[in-house]
Length: 256
Image (cartoon, rainbow, N blue to C red; front, side):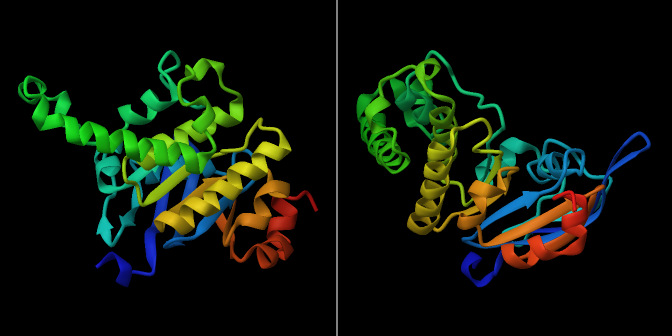
């Protein structure tokens, strides 16, 4: 059923205000399946508010959000997580004293060993635990984290921390990943590596990425579609070349 739907996410006429501030003013956009899309705009344009509405942190005042054809408007984040939508944040929120591998295993949706009754009978959970470790090991390899699998997360670089967060999202069997500035504060070499790995993950698992990102000098070569916002409105969308030539985008985002 999902494969018949071109767009994995549809946002229709979303509005959100904070007092007199109209943070989102009738936003509508469609995120195509198995593509890498970025959301750009100057500070205060409403990007993070939109991501927060999509991911269930905020409830919109008006409009609808549809995921895989289903109306999910106002669903809480834990429910969206179970449905296959995962979110990362600009500042990674990891279990700092746990190892990289342990951080990924914590994100596994269903672990029989977590049940008190099942934990008493090793045969009920040992195979599942083994599969989870094999899956996590594969993710670590794809993310370039195999060499630090046993390191506590507080020992990692900023870029590695962001990769661990992406890995945790992947452990949930997510179909759509919402990433908030995944290369913010990361050196250019690692920033390009992160986006290269995002492309590999898209191709290997058929994932869709919807990314808030400021660093266009890094992101542009990797993305399929750009959405540009200003003053709570969507001002342009499409392929990167066309969007960056748009006069409204040049005026609002690139400073003329």
